[in-house]
Length: 132
Image (cartoon, rainbow, N blue to C red; front, top):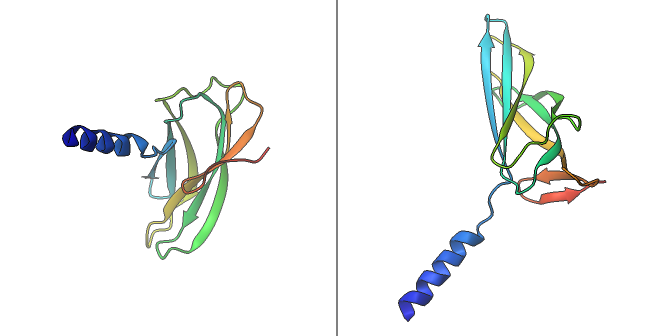
């Protein structure tokens, strides 16, 4: 009986862990020694299709100093929704600084689910926050 209770508690703890709703993969590539193409891939783990997905791609120097930020829309409302388990990729171009490579970070700013009128912001620590 004690073994059964221990296994039940262990399985409950494993299932209770939160899964990030999005996996974000950023891959910079140097092209022709003059520019950097940054591919941003977002994988949907939410149980609903995503109808609109927007964020900002920030550029930081090798020392961690903020340099630039560009708005990036990964999924528009007129495109097919991003289903659970699928990913989408967009690319942005930046200038290459030859001394030290820059780093890039993508932050999701707006998420709209298919069939809903509400717009959410998503933060890894806070979760989904309704903004409209």
